[in-house]
Amino acid sequence: MKTILSISLIGVLAWGSVAAEIKVGTLDLQKAVSEYYKWQEATRQMKAKEAAYLKDLETLRLEGSKLLKETQELEELAASSALSLTQREEKKKSFEDKRIDLRQFQMRYDDFRAQKENELQTYSTRTKKQILDEVLSVTKYIGEKEGFNLVLNANKTDPAISEVLFSKNVDDITGKVLQSLNATKSAEPASPAKTTR
Image (tube, rainbow, N blue to C red):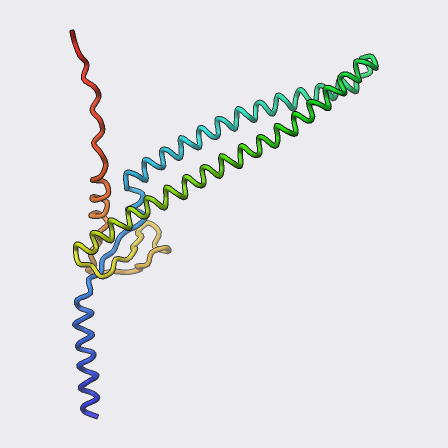
C-alpha cells in the first residue's frame, strides 16, 4: 500500500512540474482583427463597393420606374374611348410590347441584384478569411517565439464568445500581435514635391 501511495505521489509531483512549465497566453482576437490596418482598409473598400452597388441599383430602379410609367400610360391609352379603334389597337400592341420589356427588365434587375449581392458576400467572406488567417499566423509565430504552449481567445468586448472567462497572471499578447501585423503597413507615399522654375 505504501508503494502505491509513493508511486501516486511521484506521479502527482511529476504532473505538477510539467503543469508548471506550461506557458499560457491570451489574445483578444476581435480587437486584433478590428485594429489590423488591412481590416480597416477592407472595411473601407467594402463600403465603397456597397455604395457603388446601391448607386447602380438606384439607376436601374429609376429606369424601371420610367418603364412602368410608360407601360401604364400605354395601357390607359389602349382602353381610351377618345381614340379611334385603329389607334387603340396600335396602343394595345405597343402596350403588349412594353409589358414584355418590363418583364425582361424585372428579370435583368433581379439578376443584377443577385449577382452584386453574391459578389459582395464572396468578397466579404474571402477578405475576412484572409485577414483572420494572417492574424492567426502572426499569433502562432509570436506564441512559438515567446515559448507559449497555449494561446486562448480572451475577447474583452464580447466575453460570451471568448474561450477565457477569467485569467490571472497570464500574458496578453494582443498588443504584440497588433504591433507585428501593423508593422507591415507600408509608409504612406509622400506627396510629390513641386518643382519651381
